[in-house]
Length: 55
Image 1 (cartoon, rainbow, N blue to C red):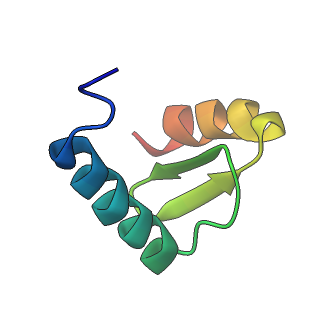
Image 2 (cartoon, one colour; image 1 turned 30 degrees about the vertical axis):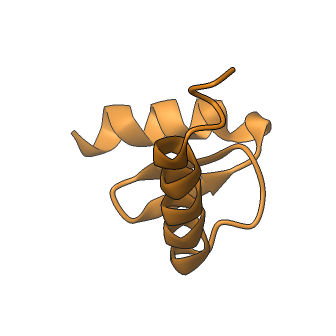
């Protein structure tokens, strides 16, 4: 619990939240493959298909 409340993790959460907002994240789960954004747990299959066909 102490680690969860540490300044290190608080700073990381703030930094990563700002990065997510800058990238256009508006909900969870959001998955990025490069610059391609997929949103919603119904998109996992699309992510798999995208990865298989762009590699």
